[in-house]
Image 1 (tube, one colour):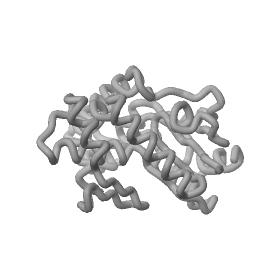
Image 2: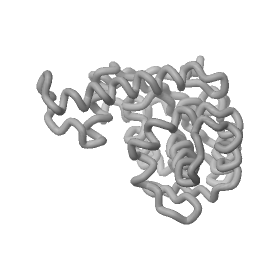
Image 3: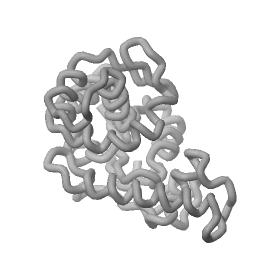
Length: 222
């Protein structure tokens, strides 16, 4: 089975890049981050505390989770929009740091690849934990300020090309930057499946690269 692992922090361009690479190669694509967001959504929906490891682990094992292209379904409910909301954003790193949640999601990710006969997966530990023997490993990164601006635009918090200093757009970007820094710290220091660069990975800094340049470099590696 051919597996292409694309890892990196939020705002580095993983999702759009992984989708494009999968499309160009005619392969299936899986956003593993959406799976952890789905578990977080389910925990919050059930009235649980994301910091309660046992509760979150039980939810992760029990939910019916389907990630299909651009849609995410949790127990039959289309949660595509909700998993990108602020409440999930604030809690997802806590849930994703839970070893039992990660164990369950990793098992589901490996089963997805077995069922599909391979695929392009993006996340934070695909090349280091989920598929350490992946044929191709890529680690995307970017300047923190650029990552924050990208995520703010994605969330509709910075519509201007260059948010003015002191304006509402700048405040939005600053808030996103602080949240990304918090998530980076949690993701990179957790004991299980931390955000890390696989030894064999091609590290691509997308700060000054065009989308097409990034795609072409990965395709050349493939």
